[in-house]
Amino acid sequence: MYLIPAPSKMTIEKEQFFLLKYNSKIILDKECDLQITSHAKLLKADINHKLGFDLLLTKGEAKKGSVFINFNKELTKEEYTLTVTKEQIVISGGSGAGILYGIQTLRQILENKGAVIPCLRIEDKPDMPNRGFYHDVTRGRIPTMEALKALADKLSYYKINQLQLYIEHSFLFQDFSEVWRDDTPLTPEDILEFDRYCKNLHIDLIPSIASFGHLYKVLGTKSYTGLCELEEAEVQPFSFFERMAHHTLDISKEESFDFVVKMLEEYMPLFSSDYFNLCADETFDLGKGRSKELADKIGVNDMYINFVKKICDFIISKGKIPMFWGDIICGMPEYIKKLPKETICLNWGYAPDHSEQGTKDLYNAGAIQYVCPGVGGWNQLINLIKSSYDNISRMCTFGYKYNAAGVLNTDWGDYGHINHPEFSTTGLIYGAAFSWNKTIPEFEEINREISRLEYGDFSECFVGTIAEIATKAEASWFELVCHKEGEQNRLQGKPWAPILQNITWDKVKASNLFITEKIAELYQLLSMAKQEKRHLYKAYILAAEGMKLWNETGAITALGEEKEKAGSQAFEVAVSLEYWYHEYKELWRSVSREAELYRIGEVVFWYADKLREISKKKEKDPTAGLL
Image 1 (cartoon, helix red, strand yellow):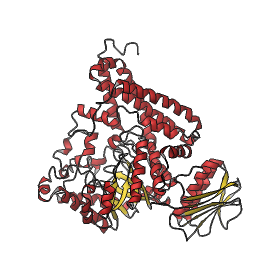
Image 2 (cartoon, helix red, strand yellow):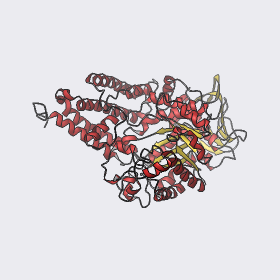
Image 3 (cartoon, one colour):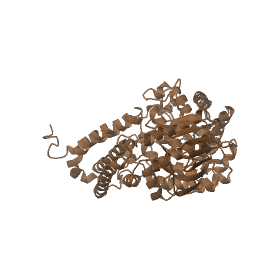
Image 4 (cartoon, helix red, strand yellow):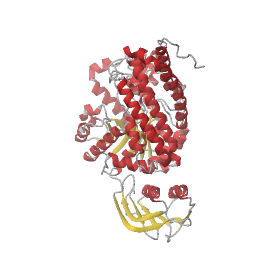
């Protein structure tokens, strides 16, 4: 039987069962409040969905044949027990959160066993108190409210208790109409509604907003460009690459802090959380432009920490606990002592072999820290699943070793957030499993569990198959975007990795053949999937087909002297890209607002036109006979 996260302690009685019948009842103890009633309704609805039984929900004493739910004051806040005997099921929790987690475990047992439930005893509580997920809603995608609520439901199912939505410009700020006028931003009402929804699931929705670096769109407007380190930021053409590298506030101006305060005062009251993430990561331009005089006087390190402290002090004055990203402070861990003692450092690292040194240094410096791995989805059509497993398991291990206060598993959307958000589910589950229970299962083992429990795949091969497909991008989205922007003279800096330099036709042919074979496997697995999950198979197949097209596009574009030979298929690839994008738009709109979908289209259309130019070098007109 697969349960994720694995319980702390579970004993099963062999050949002893409880039979959940159509006339069984869900009985709440008299002390259960309205919130517990909503949790019980979640169980009631799931039983109806899985078994077709619409059980009666009531209050009273435990009875034979029933599911009984109550509080146990001897248990800690998130602790629960789940006992199944031949006579009844009893879920006890130390709080509403504990009861909900017991219910979620019972739902997973129903997924495994249906109405015939083995007699067992589970005693469970988390090894890590704060277990979070970080979702980028600003660099391409802005989710629909339905998608946000579905995400919260999934987080709760796997016992995650914190969520942050990353915001740079994708919120309907007052007086910032220049920033969001071409977007489909989240509104204050959206945040209020979603905060309430999360709170009912015992998820702390923590506000997170860029307040120092990564203010590309804001500082590129006519109204706010004067606060940017860079001169003439407002006249620079859009660039996915430059958006990741710029823009940083010119903190030598007092108006910059006033600007941050204005954002925070408007955004902060919408959340019930006691925390606020000010971000302050990747301040690449700091001291290199308009504030160079101040940098020469006091040094960039002091500039950085002084401004972060100023924001932290403001957040604390509002009764909140500040959080910030730790990439800068990791290079100068002793500076953590300059910040208010309650400040939480979000120590991120996304490489599969990420070093523990930064976590160790922050621990030795006395920092309160979360370890922050990633789900490996940015710049990928399909998330790098093995890489994310290695990274998340490694960072969680560091967290336990150095007494981290929490784990915040990140899902970024660099370069347009091209991957379907649902593709981050496997990495999300890794983070949930490893932060609840410090015993980390092997890669193949947990993939089988996820395949069965999340996707209803009785072959238990689904996650393993998509993990293999993900490794076959010979022309990555990052490379394709940077090549395009380089051709358009939109790159001010040099990309951090080679661009289409290692691609060969032999590699493309081998990878595309492999992907084709794996797509066939997905079609074969489809009949064994949960009905409600089958639409995801199409999403993965579409992404895999996209990988093949982009592999061919990269090869045709990059292989210099072979362009003439490649021209014979360039026209066909151009047409296929456009048909692929038509399907991709439909998938995007199923879970996301329009947001920056058009920017993905701009890349597609640029390459389609490029491929047609190459095809014209053929002696024979490629359009002959097509109409």
